[in-house]
Length: 64
Image (cartoon, rainbow, N blue to C red; front, side, top):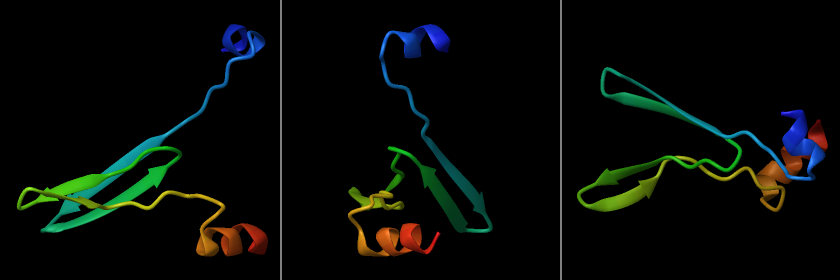
């Protein structure tokens, strides 16, 4: 907590959740976390990074 921040170190939070029911999956992410699924030996991204450089993310931020 305070001691780590006092030393000038950064801290942060990240989280990935996955809810699976009746053959459907709902995934959310926060921070620097990514969710991936493997299908037929190939990795497929389930989440997108929340980066201000993305047009849709920039529009969302500016709308707030």
